[in-house]
Image: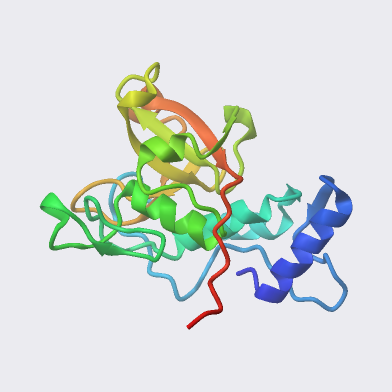
Length: 221
C-alpha cells in the first residue's frame, strides 16, 4: 500500500527528476514507501472468468517497478481496483465514490460494472475519467500494447475497428493481466486477457488517463 507520506515523496521525487525514472522504494531516507498491491485484508478473487489470485511472484515484483514521473497515479488506481476484489458485478453500478446499486438487472445488486470500477479506481488517483466507456476511451493518451503499465485502461469492442462498439474496460496490472468487473453473476477479479482468444479478438486499445484532475474539496461548510 502506498502511504500518504510515501506518495508525497514519490511526487516530489518525480518532479525533481523532471520526467526521469524513479524507484518507488527508497525514494526518501527514513520514509516508508511500498508499492505492493497485495492486501492481506482483501477478499480472495472468486472462481470466475480466468480467475487468478495475486501470487507471491506478482507481489514480489511490484515494489521494484521503476516508474516515470506521474506513473504513481496508475499504481494508485490499480491498487484501488484490486481492493474491490470480491465486490459483485452490478450492471450500471459504481461511481467515483465506490460501489452502488445499478440499473435494470443490476438494480438490486450493490457493486460495480466495468466502467464504474474504472471510474472509482482513477478517482482514487485524483483523476476524473467519466462513468462510461465512451468518455473513458477519450480520457487520456492511447498507449501501444507493448507499453502498457499498471493502471492503464484496456478496452474491448465488438468491432475492434470501431470505438463505438466498445463494451468492456479493465484496469491493467501489466501488459497481460487486468482487474475488472466481468459480467452479471461474477465479481471484481483478476484475469489474464493477453492470449485469451476471446479477449484478443476484441482488444481495441489502451488508454493512460491524464489531465482532468479532480478539484480539491471546498473548505466551505
